[in-house]
Image (tube, rainbow, N blue to C red; front, top):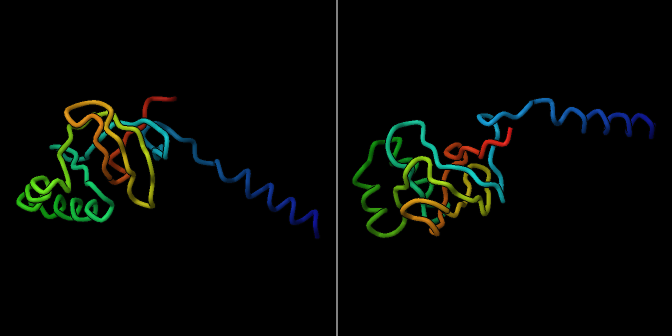
Length: 123
């Protein structure tokens, strides 16, 4: 019975890495460097906190530019250029807290969806 449990554990551990990561499929994690990306044209909106990240995303999906402008005016979000280099500070299920290390907002921190980050080329 014990041998069966050990065998199952080894099999499960070896199956964890069946998908080969590529620059496109890699999900950026805490401590890694990446660049900001958005599938659609325009700036990458960075939210001041996780709750605002959800509001930013909903505003982008709904095309609510007035709401984005209000968030920028109150300091709750800012538009960064695609390609801006960031360092991932923290992570939640869907978002990453980042510090911008290049561009106009270098030194600022905020939250973006993890899909908006492209890892450094490591492959």
